[in-house]
Length: 272
Image 1: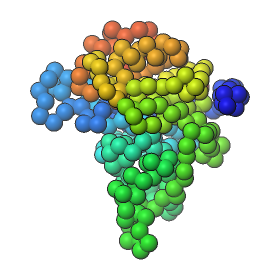
Image 2: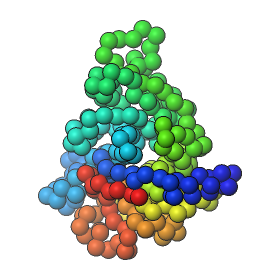
Image 3: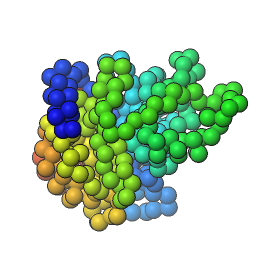
Image 4: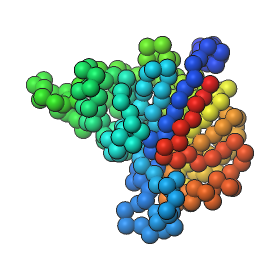
């Protein structure tokens, strides 16, 4: 099985076009600031300490993909100035990653077509439960229009762009990370098998979840994320899906190893 991924990853690195990534949100399920909290992070005036729910926008050529549409999806699209959406890709079924899908209606209206949605069976079950009106036999005018595509651990293409799923574990739940060219994105994880780590071999830019400094049942701590990032050996690692317990952005960044930093909402990077 690894020979298949090895061949494909090598060819992506040689032949791939640049990947532009915009961090739409870098916060945990409750966002930062946390409602009602008066800690130094939640009351910080630094914009980099304000974190919407985790999501990224990926641009390859003239195509625009978004990974996860949480409760802040509408706000994120407006803030990023996103005018088109060619595909929506889901990592897993938790509410902070799927709750905003209804707002793809605006893209339906402007493009005149359905949005391609890529999700595994577990996520599709949640989408049908949470957005049952989208899948009803009698379609109500103005509801989101989607083309639903089933994905699993196998690589898939969106037109000319190959996307390699990376299965990680979030407590007991399988979650999908994704590799696109030399860029890899992993959120909501506290374990990655050796087989799945092979898919990350040679990635130049890694995004990895780091919830907080204290141990957690279903997320990497900052130290655990740092150790894994060192093992993978990407040129640059950004940490995401952070709670207010991670600490102040400016303070934590000063303590991180070279080539690692906390991501922040609005950060844009280009990966060749």
